[in-house]
Length: 136
Image (cartoon, rainbow, N blue to C red; front, side, top):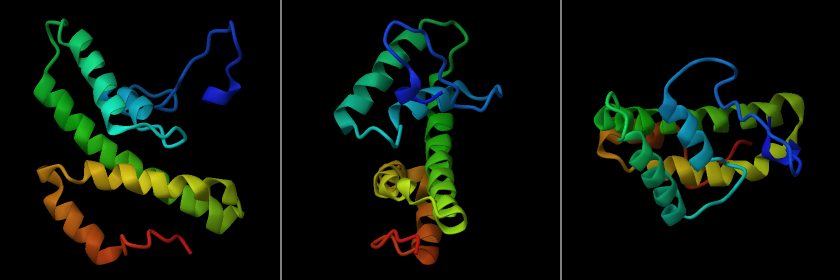
């Protein structure tokens, strides 16, 4: 369910994993890095910090594991979104998603600053012109 389909005084479900069970990091990063809503780095940090403050109260919560999953899945998700939106434009002539790609690149480039992605950055720089981020 998308945000715009929820009306006032009604409960909605946000399904960021297509009815599958996966990492809880994917759920929170899907909210924090929603490409349809531009948010500041400060707001993203506050949202994540709030989530972590609650999650840390759980005895089996492993912050190192969560942080690693969050980083990896955020990069994977941004790349997936860029690919899907590009395909929707190229194959299906749906250009409404094109306007979301530049912000998705912004999110991806920010997440790629994590040192664990050094080799991934090299590959992306070799294969994709990050200056244009062009799907045409």
